[in-house]
Image (cartoon, rainbow, N blue to C red; front, side, top):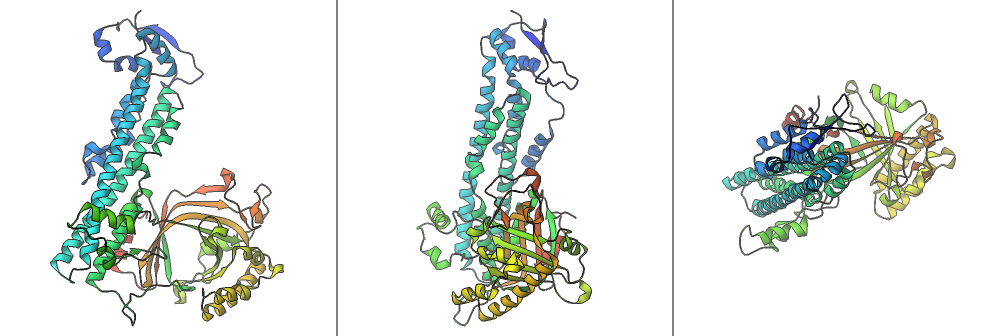
Length: 537
């Protein structure tokens, strides 16, 4: 029988699911060897290609053109995947063409899936190869930096190598995101054009692919240690009386100026790389490997892959630069605290509960914090004071009639050696003031923020500290403010995030947030960073 053309009846050239198909003859097409050799000419008759789906193809093309360390052929062939999308017939067309052509057209959807897997395998091979190369370079930098003399040609060479490697890591992170998005968009396009739910399955498969699962965070930590080793070689760090490096201990009180900036998520890798040239990533409880420790992994040949892999596996693999932080802000029904802070009046206070992680019980400690804003005219610096208490004590803190015994809380920590006598006395005074303020102003849990933070600062000082928060969401803590629709709260003072929440009570924030915290004048490199194109105006 003659080949048929399916005419689609809709003003936008895309047939709704409930609209009928009209089959009309296509006399200009007839069964021939030429048509069998060019099956796309048949598929173009049974699907409609929207005219505006080219934007992401341009993004991929621009990434290929701008890449320095990645050959264009290693990128996902997004345009090729799109072609396969349009080769695959819709369900109705596949049934018709199967009857007409003996089944060959019905397999074209399988060709799309097969091609997508080929592209994902290519991306996985490339990521694994690049990670191996980068690990080898950084392992050598870490070993050789400790031997380099200040202001030497070797130190300058290692610095240039590390900066080049930093650029490689940034490009690799961008490559992974470009490829992940290209595959996701191609799968979504397949569903839209073919009117199937196959795309959802493909997106789930995407999450299992090695190039999407490989963690690049250990490379960031390794790069951070590399730059730190170079800074130490150029300017030896401060040491104590016994010659040991001085380690920074978080104080209970802070005096500093703080400014926040929005950052587009695509600029986060480049921003991180620029900061690492000057400040290390701060991971509490982690100590970078020493030259002696790395020497214990010595291999017989310089830059031998086994040496680099040993260094990576022992000191870096599994290390994360991101940590979940939760802040629960206290306010009144009139949101007095919010409006005062927004106006930035001198002396405006903010009260919040903070813990490190998502669940306060697992965190083990909840910090009661009071932040006080001071205007420039006051001549004083803004402050942050904090009081550590057990999660089980928060309920009593928020209910003045229960009168939390702050002294008992801090005495237990003093006995355990977690705080000093001075910190204990300051904490007791702060606890009394905070409880009085909460009772006077009627402050209760209002809004919770959860985000993943990367912190940057020197190992021996927090005079210049930068934090970068990503994956930020705001959650309505409405129960304590009288919202009858809010679900039950855990510990009677905050929502239980292990239970489903109303989507209307969650607001994902579309940007990352850079916070610059200074106890001195901003260094030149910070000024340059703030004036760069990486931050939103």
